[in-house]
Image (cartoon, rainbow, N blue to C red):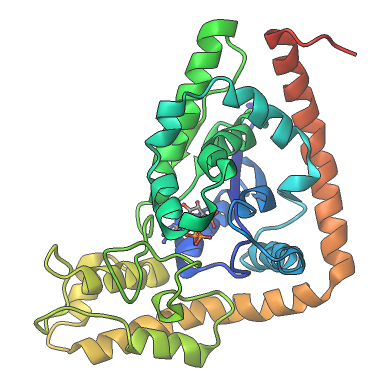
Length: 332
Ligand code: AQP
């Protein structure tokens, strides 16, 4: 029997709750892949400390995000679910890969440019080398496929360059990962500035929908979502607000753009925004309730992340040993 392909992806616990962007861009696909692939998913707390975070908040947010991804439908029995800092080989491999990553490459990363312009008081070197740690996350599990949103395309390209460079020097040691980007929902935009990505660290809470938002909050956020001039409900370059809402509506209902445009022909933005809010609330409400239940069950969460870390480390240790040997570390 053919071995299943290996999938790895991660989500940061920053902000404490997933956004609708994280859901459609990544987690929904993680859930869809769990039966057909050998999947490893991580709450990447080491990435989250590149911006200053209160320690007790980071701890509770990490567990909340773990509860949320399970509530989205990830089965801990089918997937390896773990917390990144529990597997020390991530940091170990990141150092090695840093020696195969060029300063110029990291300087070109748009996420670094964005995040450093938003946090000019804390442009730390972790923020700069973040993509090298991300490459280590992926490479450590001999990953074939990486399901992520569009914003991660550049980082994945860098990971592939690192693999190519390393293998060029040492032979066929590292598995070359492929990007997996969803057809609909790969880049959900801000509800307030639809030319910007929806992001959980946006200072304006009206810009994003969180998985923990109540039905009323969801409806209110969509009601206040920025639309465009004119009144026709159709996507287009001249209508970034409506285009984004249409993407969300199609991702939430499974309808095509043509079906959605026909449905709202002759109707106004008000009706459309209410329908988008309802479609999103119908998906998020059961997830929110399941996540709240699970978050309270600390013993169950602990059992899941301990088991996940043990299984992840078992793979990571073997891959790290293979790499260490190739670069000339003395085995002990
Ligand atoms: N707006 C988005 N649309 C589609 N996909 C998205 N992703 C993030 N935002 C969108 C995808 O979600 C996965 C996990 O992302 P992350 O939390 O690890 O990092 P991020 O991309 O930095 O997410 P945020 O919300 O913007 O967090 P902050 O504000 O803390 O930086 C990834 O696969 C990502 O592509």
